[in-house]
Length: 75
Image (tube, rainbow, N blue to C red; front, side, top):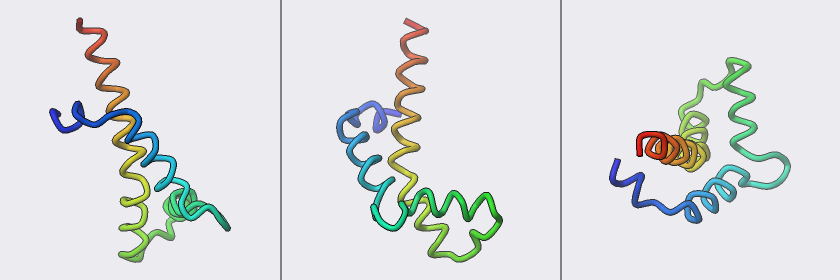
């Protein structure tokens, strides 16, 4: 968890916005892959990799927020 603690919010927010929304047109990859996942069409390896790559910064940001909130409650 030291790695997560060492990441700054600024870095995670910028990465989440840029990778989460890239490419900006016609629709963000993350949104497209989430729709494919919910529709059961996420079967190709490249699509799964795309979901992981574009979703990782968003997931890290959420984990950091939850970790900091939990640390605040325990203090």
